[in-house]
Amino acid sequence: MAKTTKRTMTGPRRSASAPARGRAATVARKTKETDIRLTLGLDGGGRYEVATGVPFLDHMLELFARHGFFDLTVQATGDLHVDHHHTVEDVGLVLGQALREALGEKTGIRRFGEATVPLDEALVQTIVDLSGRPFLVYDVTVTQQKIGQFDVELIHDFLLALVNQAGMNLHVRMLSGRNPHHVVEAAFKGLARALDAATQRDARLVGVLSTKGTLAG
Ligand SMILES: [Mn+2]
Image (cartoon, rainbow, N blue to C red; front, top):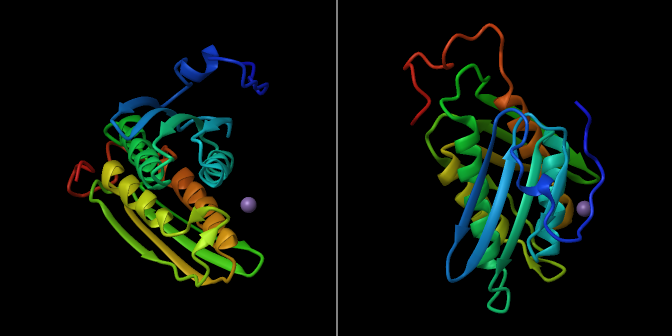
């Protein structure tokens, strides 16, 4: 099948709403604070089209798609005049919902994934278990609280929303780091790589990888 790599930003494209190949989900969520439409394809090629109105979040979501070999379309508008909080948190929430939906019963997937990713002085370890049990351990400490206009603390809120909706266990541990842009970027690349591994199918598996017989939580 031919790949579509050409992207334009001129109006809605069929590629933005057409069903992705393989395991995929589209989630639309509208509140008084945000209006989000997101499509996640797990069996993609790292293609993305992201517009959240928050440039640093776009940067993170784009490299998440690229490094996880996911196909990701995000169109979000939010009350950015208040601050970035609602938009960042709700995009995490919708991404989590899409991940959960795209995974379905989780039949045949490896379930666990981990990655340790460097970016210059930063080194971040990211571990996921698609167990159905939401739990986040976010062990990241940076002294600089802003990345440009972006409040670094919002990454914690994004990941909490993601974890709670996806029903996953996520550990993010900063092994070293100084520059928050480097640290957060290494975390998102690690999340992408860990999720890529965890969502892959293992041909040896029959049913779900659990002696309990379910990964529904
Ligand atoms: Mn960067």
